[in-house]
Length: 497
Ligand SMILES: *[C@@H]1O[C@H](CO)[C@@H](O)[C@H](O)[C@H]1NC(C)=O
Ligand SMILES: *[C@@H]1O[C@H](CO)[C@@H](O)[C@H](O)[C@H]1NC(C)=O
Ligand SMILES: *[C@@H]1O[C@H](CO)[C@@H](O)[C@H](O)[C@H]1NC(C)=O
Ligand SMILES: *[C@@H]1O[C@H](CO)[C@@H](O)[C@H](O)[C@H]1NC(C)=O
Image (spheres, rainbow, N blue to C red):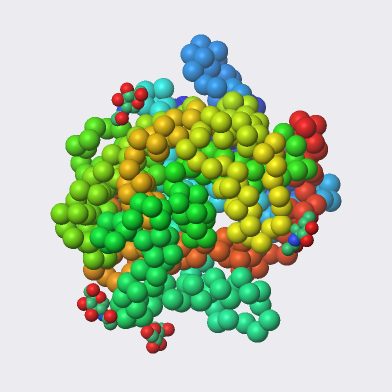
């Protein structure tokens, strides 16, 4: 084995270059018993040869580091396995693994089946023939890029996407289980949701009727009807109604969540919203940006599909996109939203109302809580965490300057934009064209995958419960609840408070 290859292995396991650093690999190969009795003479010789070799390599590597200073020495050391005979085994399945040839107490390596598998995956992803100092990316990822091809229905591929695929397949299996007597209502609903999502025949039959009912509940989509009138539009009412259909509301976001500086209490938050495209940057590449125009076309074609006049749709959707560009422009990019302290701005409803007068905040927050039948009365002195006060201030000005028709078109569009997956093929085709412009692929992912993902995002807790029941052993659950790591995190957070 060349010195370079050994350096690679060192890097992979640990950066504390002790002799034992290489054991996971070396000893796997040489197949020694786990420091138990019965070491043959051959093994002993192999072992000492081995240790010598390692010592030399370790020395060489240490020197190399001292000279080049290119390798970060602060990485974590690998998780220790229990001392032989110490009793408290984690993975007893690994107890017989002939892999830790250490005779003494320097047995620091995790050799459970999971650890070995993880190490093997990592090694497969690397290209150890490459000098990490010459091309670190190739060294770290060369094996991975050569053994993976981006599938037709995806624009990117990465370890987490593969993991996600793995989860989706497992979700499919749990969601396809028949509805069981006495199971939680939420679980039944998740299964029914999945079933209705994969039944494309039923979807073709249903047409757009159901969607139009909801559009009307939202006060109607101005682009569709000549009878839409500005005088019957009430911003707060429409925004409140959208909350029944989405957790990602347009115009601004608001929610109740644990107070990050007082974990015992829950508090209302208000923040900039998400947008119709994946993030604000898509809106700021110029008005003739290809993706932005594809998005505008997607909206226009959807409006026509729902019955709009084509010329009206073009005009209205153009105004609407102009409006959304302005909102995106006053929002903060994610890299400026990482400092939790800066995002934590306590404001009373009264404060917010005076800096952002285009919205009736008192009415909005009071009625927001009533959606869930909560009988809570908020005073105008109620504290709210305002994560981006400047957004709300500028939003007020934009709302004042924008025709209500455009604002209403936008709010309803954000609802309509999420529908295609639940609608007949001719509607899904419109979305596919937009997706092609957005992510560069026109291939549609398998239907079961769309549906498993949608069930998971809409019924997260129920689906998570099904998943854990089926795929996590009882020990895993006990481990988590009694884990000292989790407890220490809890204690740590208590201290922060
Ligand atoms: C799909 O829905 C139709 C009703 O539109 C129903 O007759 C059919 O049995 C459903 N198929 C499955 C597999 O559930
Ligand atoms: C579904 O909608 C299309 C287009 O609007 C229409 O031609 C068709 O008759 C509708 N089908 C049903 C069953 O309502
Ligand atoms: C974004 O806002 C800045 C500052 O008000 C302005 O100069 C710029 O023209 C805006 N950009 C767009 C695309 O609206
Ligand atoms: C709501 O709360 C108030 C004050 O706590 C109480 O007087 C009222 O009866 C409650 N209303 C309902 C519908 O529960």
